[in-house]
Length: 106
Image (cartoon, rainbow, N blue to C red; front, top):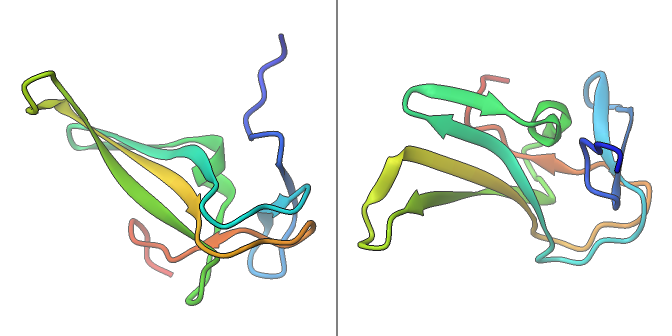
């Protein structure tokens, strides 16, 4: 099995926004969850390949959704926080996926 840094429905390509961006390799429906873009371990923020290439837009087609990893009793386990990329409007094949940056200045 080969390691794939991006989900099958996505590919990298030259971006009109900045450098390299994440693009739809096929049509993607609103509500699709692509998985983790960032992970916070205590004070350390780690980007996944997906989080490293998605570009900013003031009017994005995706949003980062915050998920907390909790124990059975509901307490946050070790301060782990995950952010997943969720599509908020239908995206056509070839379109760039974007989010509104909240971790970085633009």
